[in-house]
Image 1 (cartoon, rainbow, N blue to C red):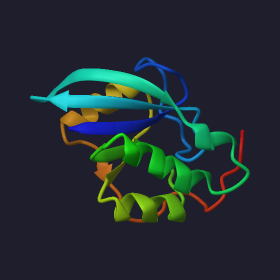
Image 2: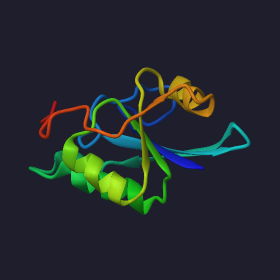
Image 3: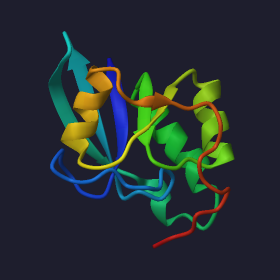
Image 4: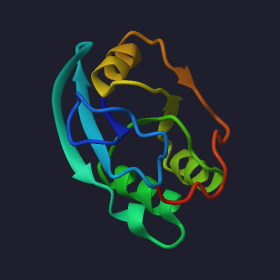
Length: 123
């Protein structure tokens, strides 16, 4: 299973970014047999857009063929696109490597409604 995590930095030692659409990176992690098989980072080119960052970010992770997304806050438009792509959405925070383990252990809360405002803005 491939998952995407909104990230403040380029590796699993970094933190989950509280923003989905405007996070600087996504960590794409592949989980196999309840273990982290591989990971890669991709830049979130939507982060600097004037508007529609959440929608574009959802399309970016969709293009990576992920089955789940982990972030702290998602706006309603990003959430809608992820749901249309049939990508599961989980809320997580803290160190990415810990959040990946929490996901593997089934300890993250699955969310089905927006957890952030429509426009969270840039840092």
